[in-house]
Length: 113
Image 1 (cartoon, rainbow, N blue to C red):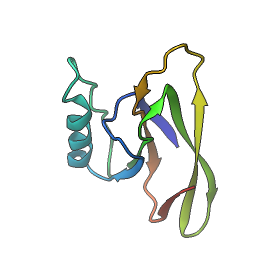
Image 2 (tube, one colour):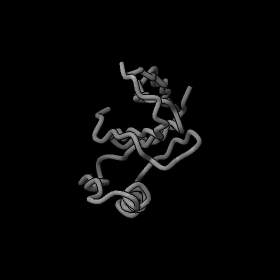
Image 3 (tube, one colour):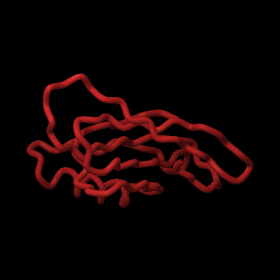
Image 4 (cartoon, helix red, strand yellow):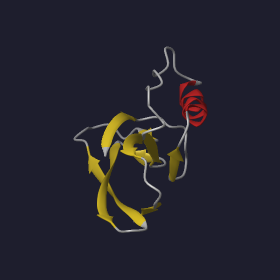
């Protein structure tokens, strides 16, 4: 699992976990997060014949950086756990952070604990 993009604005108010399996879905996600950015974040180049992406939008939070860690892999599931780390900051800004991870294609259910 490789972290490829992380930022503090996803536009998501509530937590959501997305799997992205093609360029159209990825471009759609970046169109959403780039609608208020000038310049926008570049869309990563991914070979979707070999890899897929997991996008975790942590929802609105106070200055927190979200990360996912692969907790366990079974024959049928990939189980991820959420980790939030607080940055030392005086700001109480509300952010809606997201992280995008690249993984090799597997036909397994994605579970978030």
